[in-house]
Image (cartoon, rainbow, N blue to C red; front, top):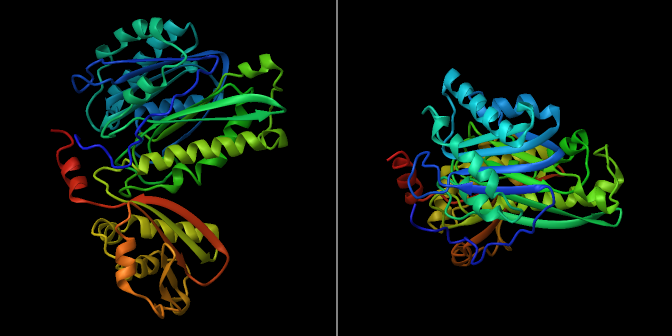
Length: 412
């Protein structure tokens, strides 16, 4: 894709080094020439790891490997390739993972179980590890603490910009750093974590606590986005904690419920939400970024279902693309969600403009005002379904002719 997202940042954030994390990336020619497509990250011994993965029933071989080993809780290396998802590739896919893991384990001088892998790209084509495992030794010589931008570029597929974010907080008065990278622009719909994201921190947190915190942060970040309603076979979020802040007297924490981790949890969630929104803002062919809030539902779960129905509706998304304040499409999406809603109390807002109230057009509504609002690059849609206190927010984008063109030509 030659056109860069209108929401691409004018300047990429500079991520500070985290002690115990070193990264490098290169062009291995896995599918395309002239593209960085292989990432290697090496970690301090005893680095803790947590992960969440796609619920797809056709998950990739890399997802199967990581899911089976994340309970081990220790990571020394991460290998990620783009260009090929290594999904729906049968035993050859599993063999490719095993060969990649063995090569990385030799380089990192660790157990196979300490190596994590991820792949993204075309589904159904065998991944030939001989194309890239020969690059791993050279990458190991090149890893450095500030290699995040190249790492983020290496995991891109139809993305138009690399996605990076950094945050800092304190645990018992000791500063800790959190960095993250992500990829995703299409085949994005919440069903755990809809893309690839790799998160890093120097906080000394034990694996079980790390898993608890990561799992709790996913639902309202990576699970609250949708571009096209399709859940990938490769969705992976991995969080690595080197624990090196312990050298600065940061306590090592073993429980996710420890009140000393409250600020860390909030900071991690903020980082993940930032990366999730960056993914939506790079949606294939997009021109609009939309925040959809549903309130007045029976529960948060019901509100999420209604918000998802709105965000995933092709008719709503094409109305966004056409800058058309067709609120009847919102009404339709609410109705099809299958959750309780009081038709005669339904209210809808575009920004601060109330377009519907008590189940009909709002008194004083002027469509020209709503049409002007819909010309904005970022829009907010709020719906009150009038039956309870449940509330939820999701983020989506519009559906344009360019989305069709990008995906029609994806394997060309």
